[in-house]
Structures are given as structure tokens and as C-alpha cells.
Length: 274
Image (cartoon, rainbow, N blue to C red; front, side, top):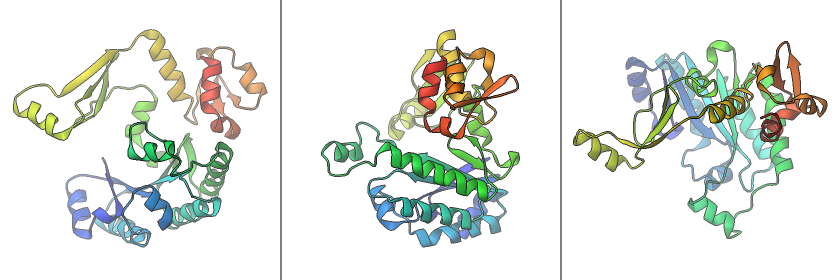
């Protein structure tokens, strides 16, 4: 049972209470160890507090501790990113997630990018940061099992995220939460006040949904399962030979798996095999 937390939002007492309540895994939103990068990301915590938060979680009895990182922020150098990875590894986490920063349209950050107030790094530099992290994680005993996730062993893999990647069913509870059950996907109203009003009135919080067609399900199956180290059955791909020849896919028995280079261009690979 996983909970997420910012490093500055927990105390030894609150972590003990969460553990007593049944949570066995905690994921800390560390994002970066570099203050100027945290400011760009609008994060408030002090990097020096992170080791304390992790230690408190261990002392409270959490069986698994995960760390979330973000790379590719404006103004982040390769050395900045290396420092963040080094700090994360010094925490001896069971699991690390490392995601490239995505500019979401309609956000204040996107408006700054559009106005040229902040400049996003180029794709080659972002790719270099991914490769650096992958090498450092592997050297520390954390193996990749999904494009942006590394784990100490199979037991440390994020089980609820695996449900999404293999197309299983799940229920989402809360404002904006998505659910997926029996070829149906739906999502709740986003605003907490609207969500609360609907529940108080005995109404469904569902905002909208869709029925997934076989073609859409196939596309999503390939898109998500090809992100996994376990790969996907070759029979489900259309003409993967070109991607194998390019060095992006490698056969493993009756399956295809992304190579390290292929992981950098996963979207390109997926478009070419579906």
C-alpha cells in the first residue's frame, strides 16, 4: 500500500501514524537536490531535509522507500543532474522513478516557456541525462523494469503502476481520478469542491468516460507494455525488423524488448510497430 509525500510535509509522528494505518511503501517527491532547480520546479522543500525524511520512514517501519526525480528542467546542467542522482542513491532507496520534465499546456510554467522567460534544454542533453542516470542506477544495483523506473528487486517494483502498464483493471477514488474496468475508462470531476458536492448529494463523481475499441486497446497495449523490461510478444507487433536493424529493439525469445538506445526514442519505435 503506497502513499506519496513531499519531504517537507512529514514528521516522525506522521510517518508512524501512516505506517500504523497500513501503508507499507512511501514515495518521496525529491525531484532534485539542487536548490535553483527546485525553485524552477516551484518545489518548497530543503534538499538537506530529504535524508531525515527517508530515515524517519525507515524508523517508522516502511518496508519500501521510493524516490521520485525529474530531469530536464530549465537551467539544470548535467552536473546538477548528477548531484541529484548521487543524493538519491546515497539514500539507498528500494525504488527510483526518474521522469523528464513535460510542459503541460495551460499551466503557468507553459506560459513562461511560450514567452521565452525560461528555456527548455535540447533533446540531446535530456537524453544524455537519462543515460547517465541509467548507468548510475544500474551500478548501484537498481535495475530498470519500466522506461522511467528502477527497482532493487522484483519485490520493490511499483505494483499499482504495473497494473496500468499491463492494461489491468483499477478503480480510481478522488477528484480527477481515472478508472479502467472491462473495456471502459472514466474519470471523476477534477475540482475537490465539486467532487465533495456530488458525494454529499448522493451523486456519482464521474465527469466523463469512453468505451475502448479493440484498435485503441491494441495500440495502448503495445504503447504501455513495450515500456517494460519484460517487453511484448513479437506477434503483436507489425514488422518490427526495421526497429531491430536500427538497434532499437532486441528479440528475447518470442518477445521484443527496447534496447537502451531504443528507450530514448520509445515513441518513435511504437509508431513504427503499430
